[in-house]
Structures are given as structure tokens and as C-alpha cells.
Amino acid sequence: MLELRSATKRYPGQEEAAVDGLSLTVPAGEICVLVGPSGCGKTTAMRMVNRMIEITEGDILLDGRSVRDRAPAGLRREIGYAIQQIGLFPHLTVAANVAVVPRLLGWDRDRIDARIRELLELVSLDEGTGERYPAQLSGGQRQRVGVARALAADPPLMLMDEPFGAIDPINRERLQNEFLRLQADIRKTIVFVTHDIDEAIKMGDRIAVLRRGGKLAQYASPAELLMYPADEFVEDFVGADRALKRLALQRVRDIDLWTAATVRSGEPVGEARRKVAEADIDIPLIVDDHGRPQGWLSERGLAGERVRPELRSRAEPLVELDDVLRDALADLIESEVHYSPVVDSDGRLAGVLSLEVISQSLHVPPERARTGTELVDPAPDDAAAAEVERA
Amino acid sequence: MSSALLPLAQLEIRRRRGGTCESEDGFCPDWIVDNLERYVSPLLEHIVLTVVSVGIGFAIAFALALLAHRREWISAPLSALTSVLFTIPSIAAFLLLVPFTGLGPLTAIIALVGYTQVFLFRNIVNGLSNVAEETKDAARGMGLTERQLLWRVELPLAVPEILAGLRIASVTTVNLATLAFFAGAGGLGAQIYTDITFRSNVVVAGGLAILLAAIFDLLILGGQRLATPWRRAAAA
Image 1 (cartoon, chains in turn brown, purple):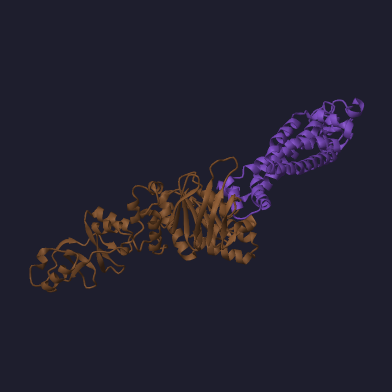
Image 2 (image 1 turned 180 degrees about the vertical axis):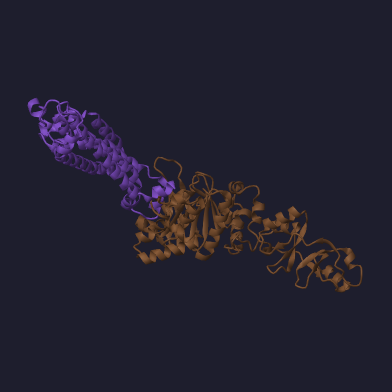
């Protein structure tokens, strides 16, 4: 666990502090994103943790122990460090780059070799990559090596300063997703610096928004930050589309879907009509024997004694329970429909998603809000705490 | 002073007989083949002068460059000083030092060491300061001490520039050492001067000096290629 207690950095001769009384706690295994406009002190704050920058007031505790009591070099070897420019050593092979900290720690050769193989695989690089020099790699590969190098000695804490900042948008998205998958396994405590609020929302279990002068404006989960920005500055910073951004934090399974009547071809119409009366939507869905939706039944299908498979439209688009709400909404808009069936991973009907349901989900606190990787536990308590703070 | 300084009375290194190639100061392959052993000891003297001067020069430049790397402010004045040293005409330097250090290799080596500094000191300093900031930041952030940073990261990365400086310094020293006989240090220059009108002599002694410079250059270049495989990888 990492704890900053009124950590402050003042440079001599400067009136305003670079980081001003920053207090926050990062629970073990979570990603804390420091985000804010340029000059807000987010990088300075991160660098105070491994004493690349010395605090002038306050304290920083790593597992209860002040970093000030530690020799900088020893402290840094226990903390993973990845920066935007990566800073791979051009004169060392990829394997030797990854091995830097294990060598400093005096690991024996076999252990280091095994660790290099393990790490290259972890960050999806071929084993042959180990023999190559940084100049022979693409930007994305270098970034992966940078992450592998930071992870080399299996440090419990990692500092990452815009680690995906220099990568083109498509590869950045991929690296972010890869990293989140990785993090789900390795569960490091991570301090992650970015200026990009979207990246912060995507990567963070908790987000610390800093304002100029190095003051903490708000420290909250992504959902809470979007729903209850602490003040105008945070509201501006998260953007006018913060409601839409919240859609990226929720999955279809997280919200209350409409129910629809499911009928099968040949079933008695009376039975079907009874089911329709109980459902949220008055058009029944015709499903196959496995419960997979086939299409919306037309009025003519209910004209006889038994249901006939007369469709008014096909069951499209099909939304999945695991889809992010933002993508599901995009599907609805693209197909020019107001609602569509939702299916589970087996393709069976799970409910109906409608524009109305989505808009309702933006009104009520998302009690089971998650990040894209489901790293954040439901945090109704945090939301309540934010309410108290606002009051 | 001049009588002591000028071993300039040309020695007859050949018997002059009328009508021969030698007597006409020509280029005489036969004479060269017969007299090659005359050039062995001047060549060895020249090699020693060069290697010792560049070696000592490198040690001094390396120490000063590390100092300048730690304390930025001494870098500029030291650099200026090396330039000033280099502007002193070499013959003047040799002659000016003789009253203090006497005739002999020591005097020549002192002057030659001085001339190497402009290449060695500057290239080492530049090599160290050209190491990318992010590389150093990553190294410190991973827990390298300043000493480990220097020896494991900065110096290896400065190797191409350091060896480039060493190449120029060696070639220049081979060249300047041809005047070391003014300080009474012998070398190929002395051999040239013993019979400066005889084309065969000048060609052989001068040719050996050129060859020596080329060999030093190639040796260091080869060493650089071996020492920096990562640069070739970058180019590929």
C-alpha cells in the first residue's frame, strides 16, 4: 500500500508549490491515475514516490515505511519505473535491458534467464526479441520491453509516466487493453500518470485529478468522478460529455434491462398474449429451441390459434451482456432502432436494451459500475462519501 | 642553443657515385630494398612516441572529462584551454620545452600529449553529455547509482565518440611526431631530415609515417566495430 501524507514539493525561489499537500492512499493491487493539465505537478508527484524528486514537506509511506528512510537506489530497485520515452539502453540487447534490475539485485544467471523468458512471453514478445537491440524494434515493441523491464524484479509497486503516450492511437488502445489484462493477473500497485482523461477513466481504479499548483481537486473512482465531479474545475476537466463517458464504464449486464415475451413457433396464442401482457415491451420475440432470438413477431403471427413465425423485423442488432454500454448504444443508433435484444454468451435472450433504459442508467447511480476490465469493485460507499463532501 | 638543437647537419647516408640513381636523388627501389633496416629503429621510436603520448593523453583527458562531467562549470574553460594548446605551432612547442625538460623523448611526449587533449577531452565530454536524458532518467529510476550510471550506461554509450576522438588523436600524433626530432626524440621525422634531398629516403620514411597513421586508424576503427555491435544493429 502506498500512502502520501501532505506530500509537498517546493522549489527554492518559486512562490507556488509544484505539489501542494497531496494526500492520498493507493490500496495494494490498484491502479491510481494521476491526471491533470500540464503543469499540475502529476509527474512531480509520481517521481516523489521513488525519490527521483525529494519531498520538502509531508511524507510518503510505502507499506507503512517512509521513503525518506530508504537509500534512493535501493528504494528504486524495489519500484518498477516506466516512462513515456521508455529510455531503453540502446547499447544493450532487449534481454540485457530487462535484466538490469535483477543484475543490480545480484540474481544468479539462471534465475535471470528464466525471468527474461517469462517476461517476454508476458508482454507478448517472441523469445528471439531478447537478442535484438532497441533500435531494431517498433515503437510498440519498445513499449512492451519498457513494461517488461519495469516488471523484471517483480516489484509490488510500479510508477508509470504516460507509458503509452508516444504510441499511435490504435496501438495505444491495444497496449492499454493488454496491460489491463496483464494487471488483472499480476495485481501490482500502480501510480499511473497521464494528461488524458479518457485514458485515466479506462486505466484507473481510482483517479486523482490535480489542478495547477499541485493541489488535489478530487480523488475518486472513475464512475464517481464522472457522476459527482467535486467542483467546476473537475467538471470541466472530465469534459462536457462526461455522461457519455460513463457509458464506457458500464456493461449491459450492469443495468436493469427490459423484459420481453419470448414465444416459440406453434405455441398457443393465448399463452403468448399472456406473456406479452407481463413483459415490459408489447412486441414478443420469437426464439428458437435454444432460446436464441430470431426476430420480432408481427401482429399477423398472433392472428390464428397458434403462433406463426411471421416476423415484423429480424432480431438485430444483437447486443451481448458483456458489451460496454457505449458500444451497445452505438449499435442501436447505427441500426436506427430504439431497442434490441440482449443475449448471453450462449446466444440466449437475456433481456431487451432500449434507449430509454440507457438514459435511465445515466440518472441513477450505477451501483455496480466497473471499469472496462472490472477491476473496480462496486463502490457505493465512495459515492456516498462524495455526496457528503458535496453537502 | 641552436647548435644543440639542430642535428640538422645532414648525415650522408649513402655514398655518392656519379651517374647512379642515388647520386641523382632519385627514387631507387634497389637502394630501398638494401637499406630498409635503416628505418626499423626510427619506426619503432615513432610508434613508441605515438602510443605513449596518446596513452598518457587519453588517461589525462579521461580523468578531466569525468571531472567536467560531474562539475559542468569546468567543462568550457578546459575545452578552451585544449584549443589554445593546439594552436601552438608544434616546432615552437618542442623548442620551448627543451630548456626545461632537455632533449629527448620526454620533451616530445609532453608536447604531443598536449596536442591530443583537444580531440580526446572534447570527444569524451561530448560523448558523455550526448547520452539521452531519458536513458539516464530510466537508469536512475531503476536504481542505478551515479557510478553505475557512468560505467554501465554513459561510458558505453559514449564509446563511438570517444574512439572517434582517439582516431583523430592518433593520426594527428603520428603526424606531429615527425617533428619530434626537434626535441631530440628521433622518429621517422629524424630519418627524413637526415637526407631530405634524397627522394628514396623521403618516400620511405614519409610512407612509413602515413602507413602507421592508417594502421592506427584502422585498428581503432576495428575496435570500435567490435565494441559497439548495437550501432550496426541500429543501421541495419
